[in-house]
Length: 64
Image 1 (cartoon, rainbow, N blue to C red):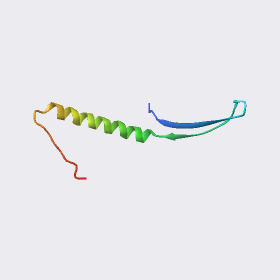
Image 2 (cartoon, one colour; image 1 turned 90 degrees about the vertical axis):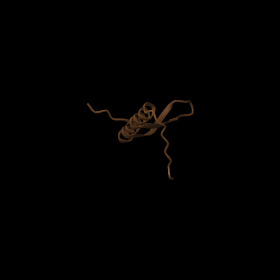
Image 3 (cartoon, rainbow, N blue to C red; image 1 turned 180 degrees about the vertical axis):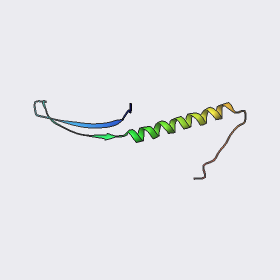
Image 4 (tube, rainbow, N blue to C red; image 1 turned 30 degrees about the horizontal axis):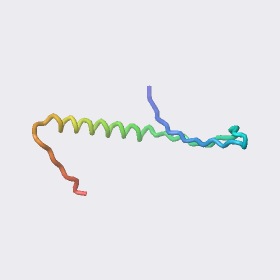
């Protein structure tokens, strides 16, 4: 079974009395973005686990 993630945004337009008369919105498939975010999170957790378990101090510098 495959899970898909979507992001929805809606705006409801109402009549003067407050009764909804129409709704406009979008629905976007964000499955790929969500998958990449989960992979990035897992990678970071692995790195943190390694850094927490080694006896030496580790430093790195971003050249940018």
